[in-house]
Length: 435
Ligand SMILES: *Cc1c(COP(=O)(O)O)cnc(C)c1O
Image (cartoon, rainbow, N blue to C red; front, side):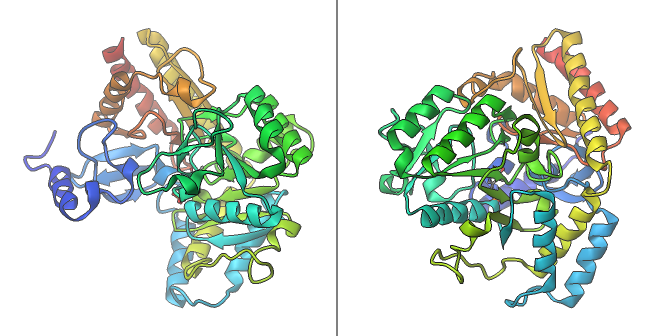
């Protein structure tokens, strides 16, 4: 039952007067799916409540960070304690060392990390460092991969390999993206051609190994192996953007998943965020000592931040990492995620609705199509209208999936079997509308 006065609508109107589009990050708006965004008043465990008091099972988890669910007691306690000790000092703390040590312990390719406040900042700084360390300018990224909103990374594919990209956002001068090449995800021949043409000038190749910003698309093992070989051969750095996948798909992150299929596999640098901050503004980039020592104050690549390694954020991240590094954590999380995806598959099958899904650890994606797409262009062939019907149908039933078909979904440790059953039951009803 909708209340007589819809507080979400009221708040959205009020927000729209003082905040562009009524939101502080575009994906929170319901522009893709239509309707009014839900304004969250509080969250606990696997749920959040909107301004009408309506409860939702939360499958976005702040877009990934809330791997323990909301308000985990150990994390709340760590944050409470940290707040009493001080919000920010602008001088180093032991907690920053502890968090750096903890991250490095779980991700073997990392020897050093620098803590920052957002994934955007981490990816932007990683590119600068890769350029500074190699003395080269050109970079490769892939269509459908998102690496935050730094100018050099905001672009779509150019018309050809030699022409480089065009900005996707107004306000980015073409000169700023002239060194960025955008290639098709999972296209080995194109990758080889790009290296043959520009390999000597390439500072780095940046990739989301399991792309979560075009729903859920894995880089194939063959593609990843070839990318690794080419980077090594040409002296370019392989940079994994694991802001989303880092400690979300496995404790060792997506690189540990690829290392299972490609013996000895490691990226040269890794960008992290989301889970490592446990919901606080915290991100990191890291790699081998020889590369990281190019950073100021040791080296000549400048990078800084007033709130970097913030004491409250690091406390939150550390408490989160302690919980997720308990034995069996990812087995349980992965099982739940697979149960959800296979439950949705059965519900769709029963209704005769084309559907396919995939997951790794606590991250998943699903498509209203028969076969998992391998690149962005195929993801974008999804019928928007059908997705929107599905999204709003689920929302009506108290299930909050990402309000756009090109976003991944996230399971938390707080989701129960009953939550998953409720979600699948709701989907069974909603798929009938799509049959
Ligand atoms: C979320 C995300 C970012 C950007 O992180 P922010 O903290 O939003 O700036 C970068 N890369 C990937 C893969 C992400 O998912």
